[in-house]
Amino acid sequence: MTHSHVPVAHLLRQLELYPVKQSSANDLRPAWLVGFIDDVAQLFAPVTETARVGYVSRPDGEGGWCVTLFLGATQTVGGPRDGELRYCDFAIDLLGVQERFQRVYSCVWNAMPQAYEERQSSTAADVVIVGDVHDQRLELRLLLSPPPEARPGMRRNHVDGSLEPA
Image (cartoon, rainbow, N blue to C red):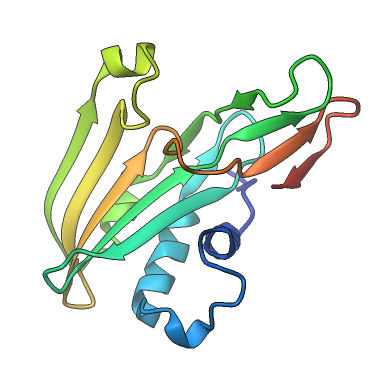
């Protein structure tokens, strides 16, 4: 199966999340974490269209890391549906994700159809995997859709249907 997401999407997303002038020396993420995020991002397989993988990472306060990954929405530009967001159907190899961990302590699928129906939460369905990567505790969340604060990952021109990174 070909991957239609941009391979360096997580790096582009990082540019959106951090101020432009922030030096890479101030990035507290260890190299192994950057590699882990890239490896897992490669496992997203968009089903319906091209999409970019977005992520958020932060220390968990106890020496480990929390990472959230999701496919960014596609925003229509121009026309009667200007600003409309579309969410991408996707598959992800969960066994492949678990193989990126040294040890897995838990793997939980959370499903909240009522929240999804009411669009109250981007966590209407998610997978949470907790384990060790490079001898450090890591909690990974794979979201059904991007969190509300995430900007669109792609923009679609309403005239010709062309896509470009947002």
